[in-house]
View 1: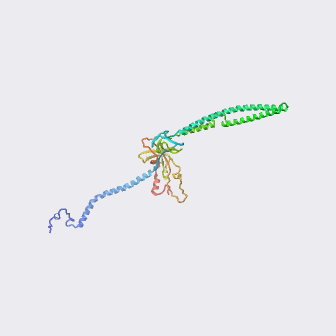
View 2: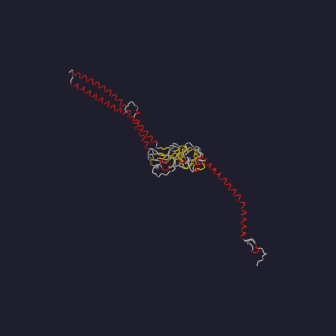
View 3: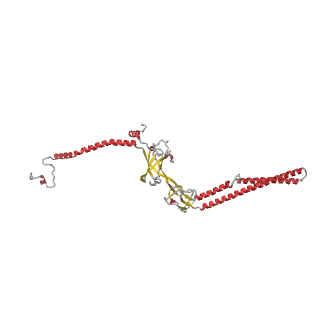
Length: 398
């Protein structure tokens, strides 16, 4: 048997811990330990109470701040359905021909009037020479007609003199025949000569009328104002215009793209697009806001523009115009609301924004970039709108 005076720790050996105090039951020992633990935790209760009261105080403050922000907000309308647009044109010419040379490269900056490409101009130079020769021929023909007109006038004057002479001779022979002084043959010859003179004068008058008609009814009109001459000059000018259009120039400053689509030796039909030119000095933004966002948006309001490509840069601008109709009105098959199964859909109204690009330190804007537009309408939501949103009715009380 173990000696009761020996300590328990010595009897159990090292590492042994008693499960209960000597003379104290196990259940009472556990209760004592729990009470000690709860007593150690009691000092933390005031901290939790203070945190709870702080949260209770912050809740109304947050509601007040949030309500004020809602009532005083709504002045800026943000539109993310917007893109950068610019003047762009498919470069072409109104004549057909073979490409002789391409003077630009892909994505090159060009100035107004800079040569983009050239067509083979030999057929057009020959046409111009032919038209110029035709102008000279028409001038000579008109001058010849004027000379014929003057000659015909002289012949008519001579014919009129001959007619007067033969008419006098006819009258004399008729009187002599009545007096039985001359023979019948003399009278007949005089009558024949009179008829010939009349016919000749009539023929000369017809020829003169034809010459006058060829001179556009006014023989005194200068050659340069005659219709035939002006027509010939117009044909020469058209040939010169076509020759000039064999050299295609930039209609505005910008950047050329898709240039490799043509090369020397390729035949281009008239009005066929060779490549494209996109303007860089004039860009704008086409936005498509919802119809519910345009309540207070008007032309001339200031706009802030943020481009997705340059998130750290911001441009200024103004609302230039708002479309008079929704985009759906211009679709190929507009929605028909008379079928009875109509579903209300929020429409998009196109809006154009003018962008201020005078600050050259900002990066360049390119057509097609996605942007976000913030329109400062100067109109806050106000208390009625807040109450309507809070209680679930519109501003008219419904």
